[in-house]
Image 1 (cartoon, rainbow, N blue to C red):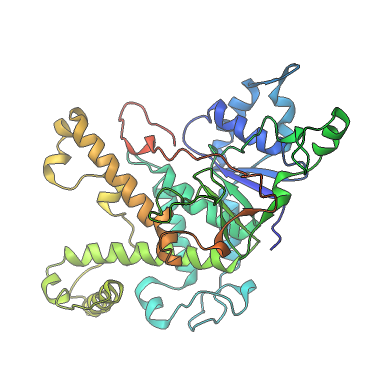
Image 2: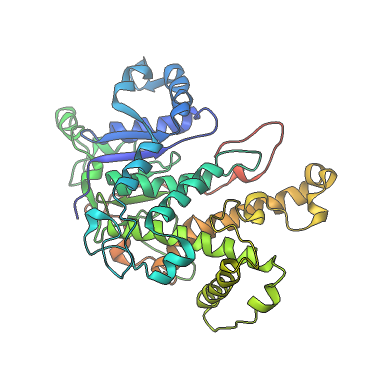
Length: 403
């Protein structure tokens, strides 16, 4: 399946590190003919430009100002992508495969009347996702990773192409241009011709979404016993207005609302009545409880925030009880801080990160071939192993850390 020749990144928070910007520039250099977009908040453009203007790229034969390459990197406001998403929403969509998004005809997610009553119409669901994205950018308990999880899918739906985290590196990036298709060293003349080829032209995806192998093995020699070591969402590719990307956006939005409504129900005076419902399938059980709670809400017997304005407190802060919330323990007990960070990371992976894809696609042990980004050149693995550390999760009141 063909994808647009666009490479997308998302950045927010602090000034982008030189190492991350070098990755972007190196990937642009090895993919002539591809547009490189760096997305973020409108005010965040300076986070890229400050590093771009000061960075020196050291080539083998000397130094030159990386600012000369600034015309090859396009900065885009992420709100424009959300606005394009809104423009394609049909808020009256109510039946299975009825075209919730105008340009996808009969290929939209199944949004029944019951789900509309529980979670809102398609436009409300996308606005809610935008709301969650904004919440994750602000306050002491910011979560740039989750904001990025949402942004990358909106970007891919509206423009298509390939999304990469800024710490993604290509394999053999220093020597790949000196090796020809037969994997022999090239002459200087042949190398000049090779430089005009784009490595991403070798991308092969078999569906309307594909995931790159973050283990650096190019989907080879995979340990099928565990998915956590081989699957991530740092590398995703899709055509423009991909049905699967759209479905995942709906899935995330409804899953978050379902979770937050369930939390509210457990805090209600009538929770003991609502929670009497027991079913084998947990998701169906929660939906039935939400339906029951909505009846009380409609009769004004209880009050619920149907917009789910506030996020899950454990996801937001990592704190689970009054003891860990105390100021003394929260900021002076390193063990508690680390445990809170672990909870934030775990919830993020589950709610907007790799876990949401595993749940949506029902991945069992490994990613099926149809959802892999593969290379038409079996000797080129494309991507190095991606560092999955999450320093953003540790809260530091005095100094915020970026992803």
